[in-house]
Every structure is written in C-alpha cells, then in structure tokens.
Length: 496
Image (cartoon, rainbow, N blue to C red; front, top):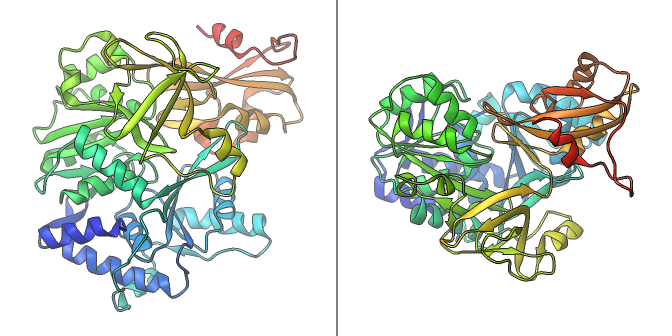
C-alpha cells in the first residue's frame, strides 16, 4: 500500500471532477492530477533512488499537492519544511535528512541556496524552483508505473524541534498516515465529492496532512491565491466552494471571529488544534459561526491523532468539555501515567502517553531520542494531563516547556541559546505567557546590558522571525533552586 493509492482511487471514481484549485480557478481534474503526478514521479526516479528524501520548502501553493503524491509514487520520502523558518534552520533540516533534492518557491530558494552552501561546503543537493522551466519540463516525461510499496516504508519525515533546540525528524510510514486518514474520516469529518478542503494553514504541517482524507473522498483541494491565511480571502473561498472544511490554528479562528462577518453557508467544518483554545474564545467562535468546530490533539510523532472533540461534542457543552482536548481517537490507546509508570487515577495529573498505528516508528538517525520517547510500546508525549470520569482528557502543563504561539511550536532552549551568543547577555530564560490573540507569546528574561532592539536584530539574523520574543524582561538575576536550575514557574508567576 502506497498513499498514491488515495489519488488513484479518487481519479477512478471522480475523474472528470475538479481536483485542485487556486482560489476560485480550477487547475486540474482528478484524472489530470493523476497523470501529472505519474509524469513527475517518473522524472524523480531518474535521479532519486527508492527511499530518497526529497524536501519541499514553500508557501502554500497548488504544486505541493502534486509534489507530495509524486514523491510517494516514486517511492521516495516527502520532507516538508516550514516556510517560516530561517534559511539556516532549513539548511539544517536538509542536511539532517540527507535530502537528495529540494523543491522551493522562488522566494525561499533565493535564501536557501547560499545557506546550504555555507552549511555543507559545496556538497549541496540541487534546489529547484517550483513552477520554473525546469519544473515544467518534468511533465514531458512518460508516466511512471504504479508503485508496489511495503506499507511500513517511510513516507513523511516530519521535523519537529526538541527541547535541546535540535530538529528531530519523526518517521511516518504509509501505514501511519493511512491510520491517520481513516481516523479522521471516522471521528472528525465526513466529506464527499461535493466538499472542499481549503488550505488556510501551512501545508507543511496540519493542512498538508489532511490532503489524504479529503482526497480519498474526492473533495477538492483549494489553495488561496495569497498562499497564506487571510481571513477575508478564506471566508470568500468558503462562500464560493461547496462543503468547505479547513484545519486552522486557534489564533486563525480568532481572526475569523474578529472580522464580524457571518458564517458562509457552505462552511461545514473547522478543525482546530496546534495550540491552546481558551473556553471564552471557543464560545465566541461558536456564537459567530455555529457548531462547525472540531478539535484535535496530536503531535508530529502521532500526526493529528491522539484525542479529539467532534462537532457534536461542542453543542451545549459545559466548560470542562470545551476546555478539554476530548477523548481517545479511533485506533488509539491513550493513558496518563505516574512517574513510576503506573496508570494515574481519575483527575490525577501525569504524563500523557499513547499507542496505535498512527504513531511514528522513531526519529530519523536519532536512536537516543527514539528510545527516550518510545518506551514499552508507548509514545511519551511530554505533555501533562488528566482524565475525568467521562473519558475527557485535559492538558495541564507541557513538561517540555514548549511555547505554542499562533499554532507554531517554539522551544525555549533554542531561543535561549541564540540570546546567549549576544555579547551583552549574561543569562537568559525564555517562557510562554498567555495571550488573547496568539494563544501564547514568547517572553525572555535577560540578565545583562543589551536592549530589546539589539536583541531583536541579533535574533533576526539567526532564527525565524516568529520565534523571537514579543516581550523582554530585564532582571538582575534569574531565580534558581539549590541545584542551580532556573525556576521557570517563578518567572511565569511574574507575568500573571
């Protein structure tokens, strides 16, 4: 089984129906998409061996759909790169994955090429601009033969940073992604060929992962012309395309509510996840758009699939339900464990663990991290939570101290390490603070004589813009325990 089978089935059932759209404009039918994918796959096989990693770094654009399935049809591995990352961070992912080829938008390619040269001393994979003449010429190749793939073969290498700041590649097989696909259709949404998936969120993450379930049902793939999330554009596309669904971060949902516009009649489902959605914000969203919302809790290591709340679960729900992340998804076993590995009781806080076919096999070239995260058949999420007597799971804290801002994960250690390279910084500690617009914002506590402007400029040259602190607190010393460990909880208390 190869995920290309999803496209193959859609083309067989819905061949002449529209498949991929840019804004309102139809680009191809399902049959045409299948033909393009097989031609592109054949061209990839000319220079990429089976199992080769092929990276894609781009803002949202329609070609990502054909690239994703062509890479799979060529029996290679799709390595999506967050387009918000700094070129140096992108180069690190390309190097760690050992990518044989990179497809990038023109804007990203301009910064990525020199970053790769600096990182790898001339031994760099080619960076091909999506949509350029060389890309278009690939479709002159005869179509590839259909793949015959072991479902355990690696399909998607999903890079997620760790607490050390070093990116880790979660290895997701065709079986993992098919389990995710089936669970989504079973639990969260039930589209058909008269429906649409609108890619408002980045296709390198959640929105891209949801291509497969909607394609399996013949729902059209719609990429905004802007290539990003604009609330007005998104709502206009929902008005135009039938049965519209989307995956959005909580901050995007809030921006939709702030438009004051009524819900489009064709809006079916907004799946939200990737960060905290406060109960008050959810109630405002329900008042504005009605019962169209579904929630997922997952990680890159178990993509989009640990727990969830259906649309029906939001109707007349009390605060404890809306404040939870729902109950275990189809095919997933979810538990909360004490420090000794025993199961926590109802209401007792412990570490959230899960197991099931959607869980990764491990981290790419990182056996130590794999052994630490996958233990006894369980994926240890690093998140703390508790179950209530009805089976609803509530997140209580994140043991990894990750800050989730606007749906993006930001790891304090990574920001701290860059801050400490500034000559004016003696010590630094980064924490998250609640924010009504972003969910959380990054706050840096700094000991030293640098000012906020200088630190902003320093960070901008080294890490992605979205990871920079939105607030600096300059202090004489950081609070520490007797072992010299910084007391982050005490720092957070100063922000409330």
